[in-house]
Length: 139
Image (cartoon, rainbow, N blue to C red):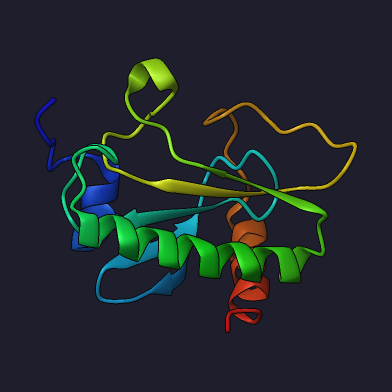
């Protein structure tokens, strides 16, 4: 599949669409998922144009996993949850809904059920408050 430069994550990276940013460096951007599976669900995207992990350069993959780990540590600390889902989907058949490589960090407390992937928009004020809690725990 060819990279579609009009996908929503590409627009976010170009500043043509907004996001609730949690972290950014020269190679990656982390922001709140607008349709979280759990409160505190963060997406990490490479700034490199790549449909999925298989299209991403080795350097881009390394940058993404560094940022994903950093975000996971902050999310766990900010929310005090027992566990985290770290996911990366490749292709529509695997559930990938945006054709730009991305990683999910999803907090998971014991006994809770995750919402469906990309199903329900969360209130913006809740997402912004959660982003601030996570940012405060970045090391």
